[in-house]
Length: 396
Ligand SMILES: *[C@@H]1O[C@H](CO)[C@@H](O)[C@H](O)[C@H]1NC(C)=O
Ligand SMILES: *[C@@H]1O[C@H](CO)[C@@H](O)[C@H](O)[C@H]1NC(C)=O
Image (cartoon, rainbow, N blue to C red; front, side, top):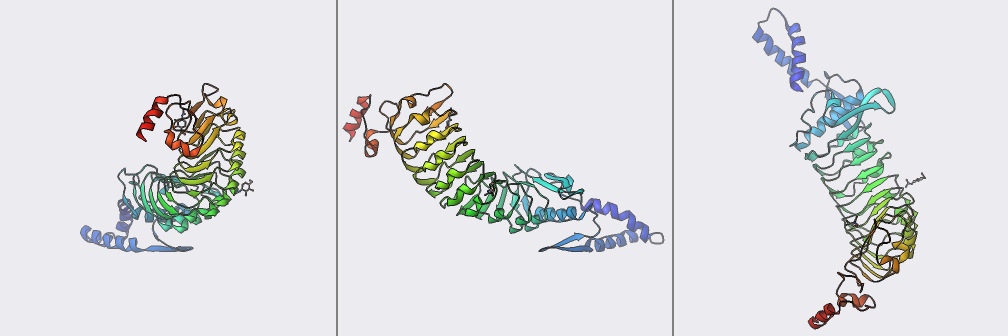
């Protein structure tokens, strides 16, 4: 930027300083003028930002001027940019910066303004800066797969029309970034693969989000009771340390398409209310500590294509009403303590359907748990392959 600036300025100053001075002297004066001009800044105050911009820089409108300031401040907080993602972040034309996209302002089509930022897969190391809150026309902010660290500045609550906020696969830390609860336009929240920890705020389910990705963090609370208020179509809780039960209110989530609880420490019985999710396609409850039987209500999951209850401590019978669900393609119930299959669960009733029976207490099936593991969980009937049992018995 400085180079361009210099070239633009020099001819003007040369004319002013003109004839009688020799060239070297003129050049010296020019340089001094130039420095003086650079220092001449314009002060703008926007809420709590003091905006300092070289008064000589010309912008098409005030919004782009603020955007310039915000992006330059952000650039200063970027410490490593190995893919040269922001290499051209110089000069007044912010709309030409890599990863910065301008459109007509929603409230004033005569103004061009920064509408989205996409620096995905940049491997950039740095931090977010509060000045980004000046980008009030932003509707998309995607910075996934970088090395951004620190926290999300509170000023992001000023991004009132932000629709998609994807900061996944970075190194953000601290509690749940509550600032996202103050973004009234937010629909898509993706904070997976970071180091957020602690509680999930219940307010998360009282804002109108369509997709919520929380997976691969270190959240360790219970799942807030008001989950049923959410209109989300996708919620992914996977790979955290959520514990406690699944709240019964989940049954109210009429728009839920996909819910993934895998790899947490959830426990208790599966609530009967899960059976109310007639539109849900994917229900993954695997790798937790659920006990009891599969609720009968699962027989009402008429839209479900994939059920995974694998790797829990479920017992009892796997029933026909689930195995014959009309849209079912994949029913995984491996690694539990089921000890009986109803008839239509014995083998898939249609060719495109798969069941995973492994590591249960099902005498007729191969690759089951050892009898001694099954005994505490129910009546273990006879294994077909008694030789395995004999070996077992000898080793006891
Ligand atoms: C869900 O949608 C309904 C109807 O559109 C709306 O009244 C309600 O406020 C929404 N809930 C949330 C938590 O946004
Ligand atoms: C069924 O789902 C499990 C995980 O829930 C997955 O590992 C497996 O690959 C799926 N099988 C098919 C055939 O899609």
